[in-house]
Image (cartoon, rainbow, N blue to C red; front, side, top):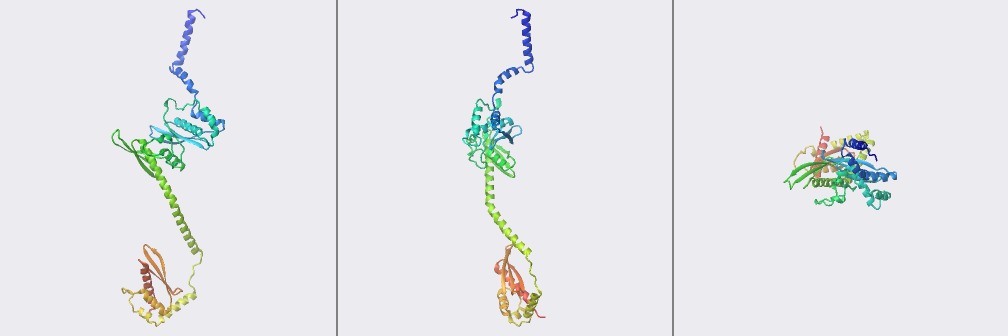
Length: 383
């Protein structure tokens, strides 16, 4: 060691100068570097999952599912998938949400005794030794959203089972999964009301999915949101059930419509019979015979007032038909606007078809007979 005082002073100045250069920008940088050196080497859920999967030629895929909450306090929901296994979690930042999703997937693989990724369990258990949560000093109590049946309210994260609102599971997460499954937009929640004293507040939050809306009430916004999501799931279940029950009716209507279309197609393709010269001559001969007939009933028809109240049109037409030896056939037609219809055929050619309508089948038949009598009266009138 040199005993020269000037050399000793020079060495001290050099050391002090070096420390000053290091600390001038950030006086705590050196301390932070020393304290953070241990945490820097600490593994996070993302790094553990990535390391284990890379050893088995697998790649974790992270996907941002939705962004919920207010603009100043958003909540990010991320999903991570490895093969056919996935887990979803939420966080107040994208980084936190991804770390929580990775942690949820690791726990899922480790906790299950069977599954397609069971071969990763030993490696994950080894990597979890000394693993941090990846959140650092801003650690937050974020609960992973377990992958459940979206329409099954009986399942959900264990952390939600302690709610005192009587709603099982995690309806908010279930509704989110349901909307993703159906490729709908994420649910939108809007605060509708805040009432009561500060220590007895009642909140009302509306949940909107597509064109449907449901509202939930609770002592806190969280409970009101859970209630709204649960009500929305119940509504979707009812709509699905109604749609399933209505399928049978729709199939029946389609079957009836198809049958009618086949009938119309037959009418379109089949030639419509037209009156021939032979049939025209037969009709003309029958009218001539009726006009020349001396039957008492037919002759009385010329002098009878057919608008007389209480006249039995059906009976009178039957008597004339028996006298002149032609047939009368009544064919009920389909009701229209609550009224019944009836067709009256005279002879088998047919010579004439008269139409009647009435509030009942009997009235329709009577009006058809009345029109047939009017027809006979006109066609058999002698000049």
